[in-house]
Image (spheres, rainbow, N blue to C red):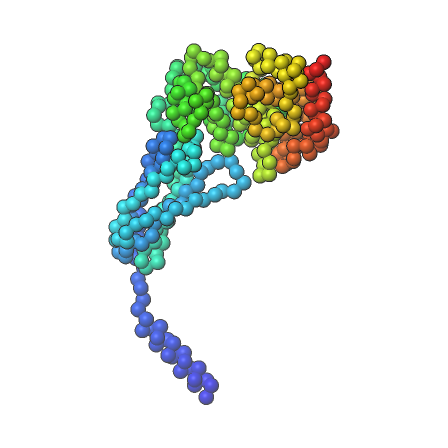
Amino acid sequence: MFKKILILFMVLCLTVLAAAPVQAASNLKALSSSADVSFPKSINFKVSAQSDAQIIEARLQYSIQALGFAQVVNETFVPITPALKLDTQWNWDLVRIGGLPPGTTIKYQWVLKDATGNTLKTPLTDVKFDDGRYTWQSVVQDKVTIFWYQGDKSFGQTLMQATQTALTRLAGSTGATVQNPVRLYIYGNSTDLQGSMIFPQDWTGGVAFPSYGCIAIGISASNLEWGKGAIAHELTHLITAQMTLNPYNDIPTWLDEGLAMYNQGPLDASFATNLTYAVQGNQLVSVRSLASPFSAYSVITTVEYAESYSIVDYLVKNYGKDKMSALLDTFRQGSTYDGALQKVYGFDMDGLNSAWQATLKK
């Protein structure tokens, strides 16, 4: 009896399944996909598709290619009116995120869905966020590429030589070397540079984007010597960031700015004078305080930069390149400020402050 009931149940199930209409898969396909760059403010993503069932959903997935510890994929749902043919777009307003440096690569794809539940992903595509307002020349050496648009080839070669000199000097004093490719964009002046940025400061002459391996500086033939120093400064910020990259902690400001100042060469006379006045007036800022962001007041900031240079100079001259290299490596492991100094030099920031200031007062 049980077997008869089971067989009857199976027959009924098969009958119901056979009676249910089978929904054919739709022919959902993309006709085109593109991205238009409006440097520096936006990127407009477009897609065109069609299907024999209404397209009911459109999502854009995109990610910024930068150094980090996780690949973040952003997704935005684009409002559409269901239709058999889709033409839609989404404008990424970069003002909302503060902009991106030139040459940044963005990967993107569209995910479309129609009324039958059929889903289509367009091929993952790269778009370069290039500053197309200028006709760029370029020169490459090892892992460094320099782009410029004002001046002849010798101008670019001079900047490349300055870059290689700065890298050699940095490696000689700290052991820090280029870990990932570096791009330098040389704008013709500070006005052009600031025009490439979102919300620039009036005084901005150069900026490093460590996560993107990018540096942008305004250099003309008339301020070439200043430009060489600016390249050394910003390049040091970028290389130091590569050497100490970790998910836990940044390096102290005095080390970051001190290394950048130190790699430029001898301390400028105006900075040295302010440092002397601070020593004589017993107004030095402590190493521990210099670990935080610097003051917004220019008079104080000048002293803080000069002190940072002096601290790095003290460490390099008294303990050598290998110790500085070990310090950077210890920070790469996510060490605290005091912990890194204690491990490498045997003193914390307060101990460094006492020893360094004692040499200044002599």
